[in-house]
Length: 311
Image 1 (tube, rainbow, N blue to C red):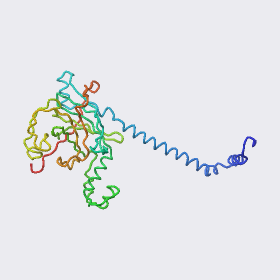
Image 2 (cartoon, one colour):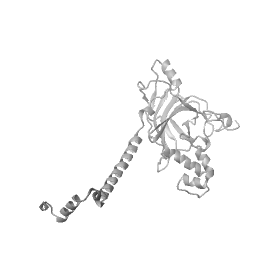
Image 3 (spheres, rainbow, N blue to C red):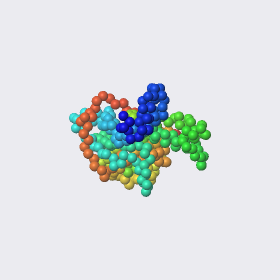
Image 4 (cartoon, helix red, strand yellow):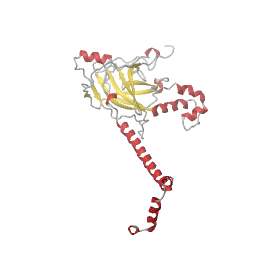
């Protein structure tokens, strides 16, 4: 049947292969090439599968992590309203925070999802998401405080080897080591909130609830002393000079700042870039929570900023 082959050499190779024993075929160079080829293809497919998974999971957040949060106060308000409690929602213009520079760079530490507002309670709700890279960046910054000027290491792990005294500080960083502060465009700061934590895949989700935020027809008296002073260390602090002339003004912007829980210093600014929670130039829409009615009891944790030492 050699007449079917244009090259007698190819025919000979085929015949020689077929006449080989099973052992010689298994340990042949041809088998090795096939194994390497399929291993390479499997590796490429695996890499694309992982990238695809990360892209898919990174595009959005599961609805279960952005739906209505029912605090005890919200449940009571819902019952008292006869099931007609008004809730507004707003989708942030940017899910990530961007520095106000020409490059408009984001630090990528957090993303924010769907703010909700309950006027009857003056309550703001929203979800923040971050991954382990954010915690790693925090550890790196903590270790950098132990370094002298000019010291550079490839990672905080390498730096720890040279500065073991920083180990205890790094060990104190847990899975959710952050403290969040809400502030508005008028200088009001809200430092007490309720929250829940969730984990899914590569991400951590924190659902935050701040009370006492009057988005509409705000009326309050501004502090009569510059920020900060010990006797004004409360949920509401005006940042900067005293704004005594302020008597009535709507909130047009809400931001959330992030601090390391063991190093909260409102004077020095937040650890991460601020995220915009609410923007009055964007539409507020009625939020349909008919499929998210109270069901069971959600366990919330409460965070509040302690008064300075000696207060």
